[in-house]
Length: 183
Image (tube, rainbow, N blue to C red; front, top):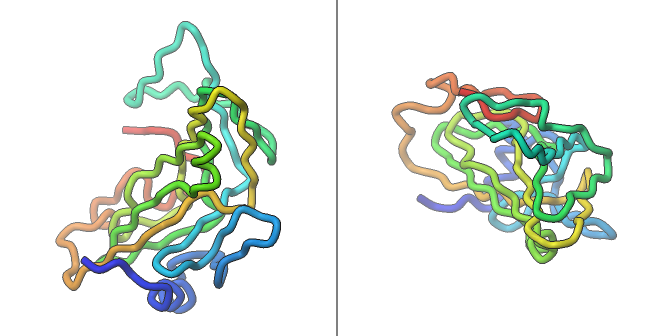
């Protein structure tokens, strides 16, 4: 399966609404870069963040997630040492049926101890991307809304999949905000 080029990404974003809003070319002046790159798209952080608060007597259970552990934090959040937050992309994505997309954290944040965790964007999934941002360092790290956080790489196939995320009516389809785990 070939990785899709900037020409393909531009065409799909402009003509098919695959990425909205779409930033043509790399934006770099005084910000953590975002926008179209050679073989991917650097997405931005929205201004919505939820810090996962440490509570001594609570176990995080993905089958029964207690949203009371999530605390809304400011537009320019600081992620405490050895903790994590949930956030979402500024961009809304619509993945074509013959494509899967993978998301990787940007090196600028990685060098500060930040790990960006995003599961694959399956064929015909659409929505804002919910991301788990982990601070593995022993120091607090600031995040910047409206700036780059991760790169999406699009991998295409000559064949259409038999069953897409849209066909399955997946539980995270069309998410329009930070979405905690659900069954």
